[in-house]
Length: 162
Ligand SMILES: C[S@@+](CC[C@H](N)C(=O)[O-])C[C@H]1O[C@@H](n2cnc3c(N)ncnc32)[C@H](O)[C@@H]1O
Image 1 (cartoon, rainbow, N blue to C red):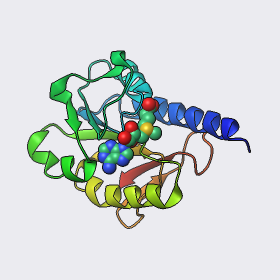
Image 2 (cartoon, helix red, strand yellow):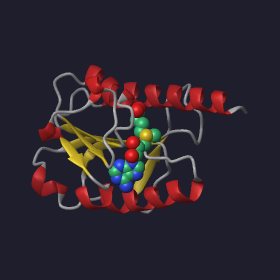
Image 3 (cartoon, rainbow, N blue to C red):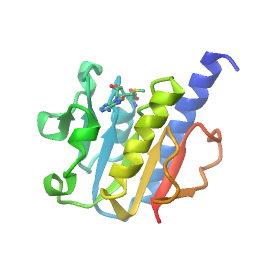
């Protein structure tokens, strides 16, 4: 598969999973966490899907499109290995959706980031919440949910706390 086809599949899977979350979580109150702002595309989509919810964003190097930079109060700059620690003391509302898109294109680096996230996210996500991301998480903490139709297997993942 060409890198173009692979990128298209990934973006399509990403959008289907985020759209799925918006209907699944429509009756559950809480806030959203976005890890990996990048260009700001998924952040912008989340803003459209959840116009009334707070969205907290975590990014090491903020370099997004100017229209997609979160307000200062909602932006945690720096390495998520540091900024996610003690988050429950900083965000008091239940976190009902965490989306992470942190892959670098290099398997070993992406796996290492996913392993850190598995450890950090288990203490942050609300019991009713969903975690959606571009890497697989540790199954000893999370239950993998079947992805909606149209999502390429192994391109995007959905989890709940066990
Ligand atoms: C693939 S991009 C995200 C793209 C974004 N979802 C979009 O739609 O534009 C991955 C982002 O994760 C960020 N990232 C990777 N590791 C990180 C870490 N340890 N702490 C904070 N941000 C990190 C990178 O700086 C990069 O901007």
